[in-house]
Image (spheres, helix red, strand yellow):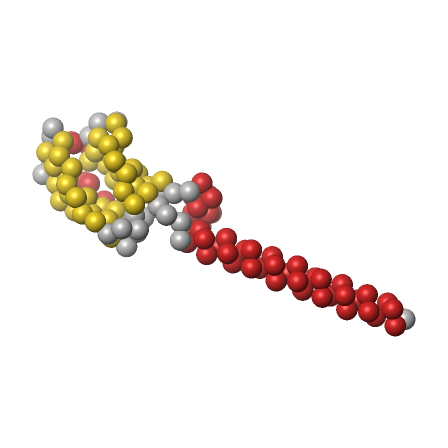
Length: 128
Ligand SMILES: [Zn+2]
């Protein structure tokens, strides 16, 4: 009877340890996915021209045969903030922050898409 009780304590102890390890692992993974480095890829007329790290707040201009686009990165999101294109649909799209949306400036042949780590992307697909 005494031995049996000791086993239960040991079992409970191991279960607790396993549970703590599991929750730590889960927490670490969850935390990691939020800190994923996201990259926006910019294409001009179907050709990749540059990628931008969304962790860095920057603003730059892209000149194309059709005109120009000013691209701004702020708070892990990217937007076209100025352009001389007709319609200005790209500006009206506003900031995008995940890989389920994109920005297109059709008159200039500009296309912006966010790519994140495969794991992060999968998590986003579930979260959104
Ligand atoms: Zn545009």
